[in-house]
Length: 312
Image 1 (cartoon, rainbow, N blue to C red):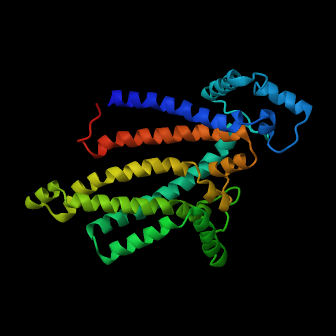
Image 2 (cartoon, rainbow, N blue to C red):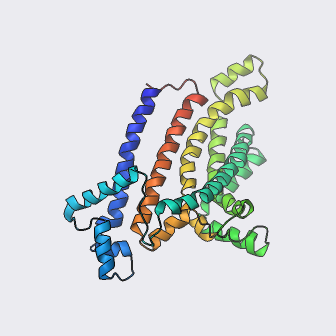
Image 3 (tube, one colour):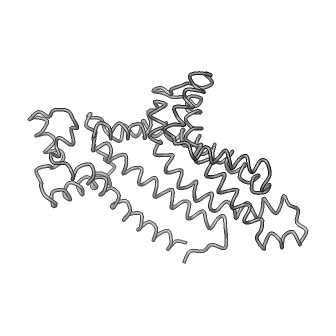
């Protein structure tokens, strides 16, 4: 297991450098005037141009200059300095204020997916071809067919404006109740996928040889499902939820934008819209680490859920 984790950590390092290099190149290398790219559509004075040239080492030109700037950025990043956005704010301070909000939103969405999705998936897998099973399949198909850009405004209008069950927007300091509706919207796609994965996995395991053996030994159905079937069935679900946690931690740009939630996704969208290259690269660099760590934790959990799995 130690060798496997060490190998994965080395792969994470390569993935981190590769991803940040691509994002950095997309934001800066393809621009004709890098200083104008840093400033976006705003006019740049001579003083600002001189400041940006010195700050981002833009006097180093060509391919060598680009890699010099990139490795200078990475060196600062490894020292914990995410740099400054074009507004002059420290990117670390922006993320420090945004992460708690996005974390609450992600946990609500993940809780919705686990509590309702996994539970309903287990029941649907046990009661295949029942009314409950067919109903959940139709509902999940409907949810998966509606994009978030449609589902979020629709839920905001119906549940927040028309029926006034939830606040229509979260505000600058959102409470748990204000984040509940966007959390449900954000977790709806995860819920639908988790339900279908759990249902399929439980149905397959119920037909496995070890279940027939357990039944022949006289074990009650509840013990067979909870001890044997459920544990093996959770492996693909944990894989999905672990990867999905990285998606949820990005703040789901659309959801945070519709409900005006000052989280990571909202700031990332603002950086893209205003062409704030340092802000976009800084946020994406942190999100890459979140994705990589989430995947590593999921892979390690395989051995906990299924002792038959061993890593060489």
